[in-house]
Image (cartoon, rainbow, N blue to C red):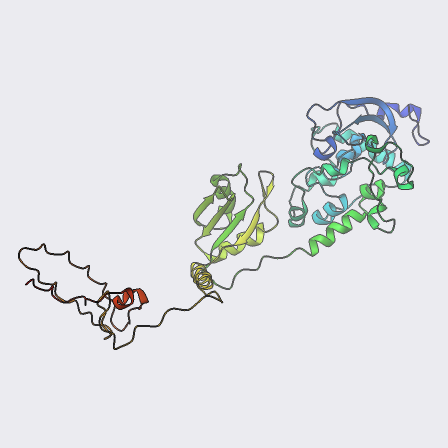
Length: 407
């Protein structure tokens, strides 16, 4: 049993005894058949220094064993995980959450005041539900745009990886692939992320992870409305197979009247068209990089106007029809003095002369009529090919003359 210099034996009734830890999905792992070890009063809480029940487990294959670091009273006071000390709702450091919600930390730092304060809070928490946060976090239920931008929507299991093998860094590890630790280059000691303190994270001060997230939020792009005022359509991406049209309509109707919602299941996206431009602008401003539905962060973009789509399509076709360099050009038209060819094409543009069919004797069969040549539109010259000239093919009888009579 762990003992502390500040924990008296007569105060043992305030030690914590729990049946299950308060953990986030990342620390719990992806294994549905997880096994835990439970040790009553195994260690002191690293915040309030009171002995508490310690849980230890392995979150998955090729992961390191994890254990609870703070007691449940301190965890519920800040609504954080007992292991990683990240917010249970958003998965963010306490410093980022408190700055977004404008929560002021009033937890005392001295040992005596801290023990007295935690005892009073423990009595208040005992009257609440086991899953309800206490303190200033429980009183602040309003969401923040900053939290919605930075909130993590899926577990980050990479955080459960084993530590780096110190023997491999020295070049002395002889286990090879059987080594349970990582064989990777360690983090640069000058990197701010390499110096993290559990107490600084809990109190929300000097947290390098929080500073990194705040800089990322400041550098996030903004969605500018298009210049064309006729565009009132928003593109909604990353819908997945769970979100339906009803869920989208129930959320987006609060910004204005919706004219139509077009679902594209194959592309996992949708197009929402508003009746007014102001409603579309309000929806884009309040949902860009902030909207999370069904556990998925949706992608919000402006749609394109129909006129610009037609122009872009015409430009695309024009680019496709550009001549390829190196190919031979079209053949020149036939000479003007050539009036007799295979298709009976005349040199006069726009006038098509079709000769009468030849007259045949009565005792001979009438030959089939030649197919009429296509009529070209006025002002155009028919294209001439060498194969249309009968003299080039060895013909000596003119085409279009009557058949000769027999003697």
